[in-house]
Amino acid sequence: MTKLIIEPLTRVEGHGRVELRLSQGRLQTVRVDLNESPRLFEAMLLGRDWREVPELVCRICGICSAVHKLTALAALEQAVGITVPPVAAAVRELLLLGGHIQSHALHLFCLVLPDFYSASSVLDLVRERNPLALAGLELKGLGNSLQELFGGRVVHPVNVVPGGIVHRPPREQLQPVFEALCAWSERWEQLGDNFIASASYPASQPVVGNFLATGDCTGFSLSGEQLWLASGEVIPVSQYRRLLGEKAVAGTHAKHSAGSGGPFLVGALARLALAEARGTGLGAPLEHAGIYANNAAQVCEIGWALSRARQLIENLLAAEPDAPLGTLELLPRAGTGTAAFEAPRGLLVHQYVLDDKGCVVDADVVTPTAINQLVMAEQIRLDLAAVEDQEVMPGIAEQIVRAYDPCISCAVHVLEVR
Image 1 (cartoon, one colour):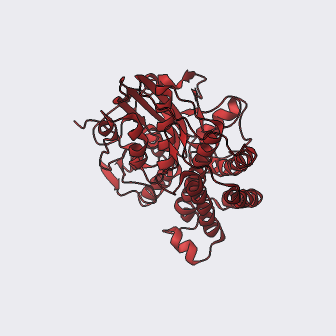
Image 2 (cartoon, one colour; image 1 turned 135 degrees about the horizontal axis):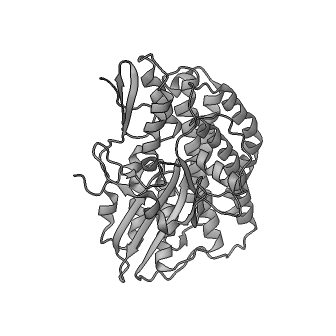
Image 3 (tube, helix red, strand yellow; image 1 turned 90 degrees about the vertical axis):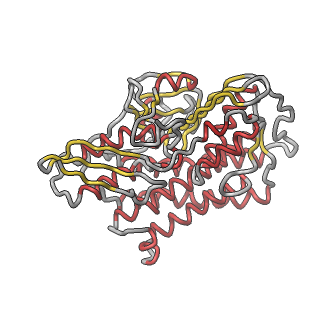
């Protein structure tokens, strides 16, 4: 038995390893371990006042801080019976879209693009003045500017608070952002096509996993009250635990989603495929059969996010100047709240149980990279099954992992390590 260890994984967020076990030159088993130190956020939240929670959980990750905070707010506001006003909802969604744009741009142009040119880093491409790399960094800057404008700062937003928002950006700040979004919408179709045309991937097998996503049944969206599966099952978000069957396993600090309906695949590819199936898709031609189609799906989502952000800013510009920004009365009460949002990498769920003083008695966070762990390993096994050259196996395995756009820091949430 020969063992090939890929550690650390490169051009991904966080620390992980892949172990390939071969017998007589043929790959037999694959193990993907997310071995960044356990974060223990759920345990840290116990006994905390519910209003403290969003500020704490957005520290789970610097890249995904906005979507963690927004998901936590939605779950907690459900638990205490708060509905945010329309202007606050629009500002929050614009913050979410800013995070989506900057994260997809980071993944596609900084982490994936170097593979197309056999480069070790996007910095090599920038030095060569590669037009896709330069445009990708510019697009990431646009996403960051949206997060700063609507969240108050680029990382760990301060403008979104329990009950609503603190500040509504004035017209003189909204108008130039609107114009920038219009310019990018015109520019994106060609740029996205150029990225797809430049793509160079290894041979791959059909994608592994039961697609899973949330979303609205009336149009493409990044949040919803139901979970949709490729198997045809539709369940309320509140029943996610029954579906996923998360459990801690040895060797990794992220729980496995071991439910009978799995293994599950979450992310842009799952979102677009499931939206298409229920008639709310974006009409994206995702021609590649394997997991690399997830990159093409992200390209499509960027175009949608640019358009959706323009629409929301138009709504803000048309809203009454004195429209309410939030709910003043934040009275504590016992309750349970569960919210599901689509992070750039896939389904994110937060659930909180509060006592009658508004303190957390139970907390659970399920992240997309943790859900994708099992399908990552199986996809690597299938895609490398016909590869005989052990020299190229590690590079292909890393490309497969990168296609999922993993965020390992978000994934490590084991409460108790045995």
